[in-house]
Image (cartoon, rainbow, N blue to C red; front, top):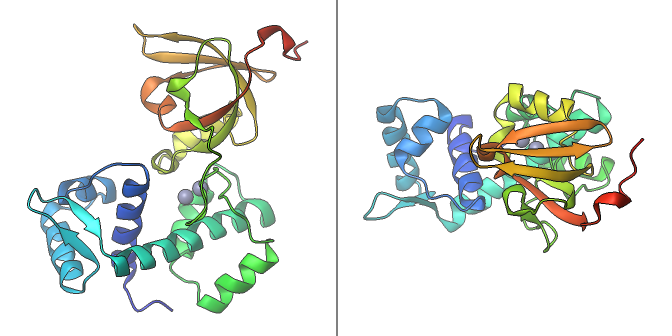
Length: 229
Ligand SMILES: [Zn+2]
Ligand SMILES: [Zn+2]
């Protein structure tokens, strides 16, 4: 079992995820993200700073130290592995495994992690497409907002921030916005700030702020080649 408390692990994992999505974090970012009061967050960060897990720079931006990074990667691995197990072995719905994995990830000994990884065939991605620590998305992956009208794309990853909203994840699953599924970009409407997609399961429209957290790669730009009935 890890020598760090579940709370510290949660902070480390959140900082790791923010860093991976290229976002800079301050204490207030963590307070919002973890739904905790700023004084509590400040106290925890001070403790983590003292333990050599995070650095705070002059502009109060937080970053993981080497030790913090290592522990965070370990938790991220346990999280993704748990999700994979819950989704693919236990058959818990794709849209809700993130919530269950949040608890499970803190309760796994190194032996359990190793055996579970072997049992699952050492998966490289979580069911939402997030690569395991040390792995990356294919190089040609772009965010859905960078696509052009008429492009057919395959979903590669649902950004981890979106996983926090079970309601949103349910909608994404209902519209087959899941890794491995293909959609064609119909149009982007600046006035409504939505992007419309179409797949053989029907049309979908997503707000820009969600679309920019979804990652895809281009399959083809030939609209008529689509198999539709
Ligand atoms: Zn997750
Ligand atoms: Zn996931």
